[in-house]
Length: 85
Image (cartoon, rainbow, N blue to C red):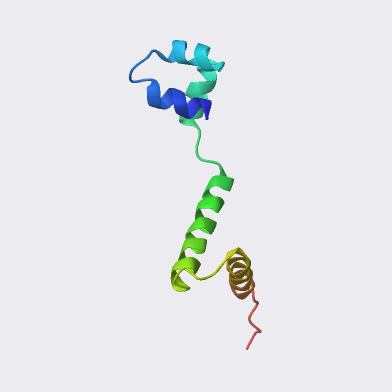
């Protein structure tokens, strides 16, 4: 959160001053800028898209227990191993 704040405000204020204000290292901020998004972030985004699709398909009638059950059913369907013919 601190680095996001710095990234937004750096057009108006010096990075060094913003880092001092929020208690972050300048080098840490620049390292954060160059870092790729975490794998967990990408996984969370994909699950969020699946949840949105499930909610839309149910016309927003499913609650969290049904959405969870549908996610589990989709995961089992994807990991099912087909027998060799």
